Image (cartoon, rainbow, N blue to C red):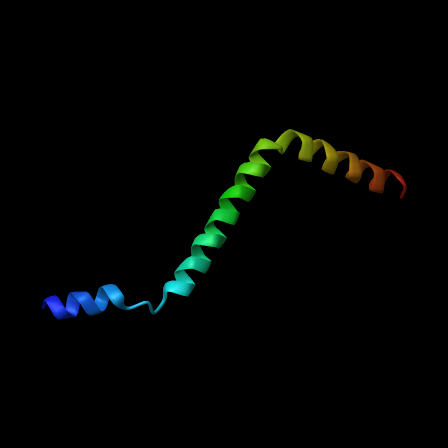
Length: 57
C-alpha cells in the first residue's frame, strides 16, 4: 500500500493540463475584476461609439 501511494505522489501525468487550467482561471478572474472595476467607463465608451455609428446613417 505504501508503494502505491509513493507512486501516486510521484506521478506527474496531467500536471501540465492542470497548470494550463489554473492559468486560464486566473486570466478569467482578472478579466471579470477589470470589467467590473471599469464598468462605468466601458459603458460610456460603448454608448458613445454606438451613438456615433448610428447617428451617421
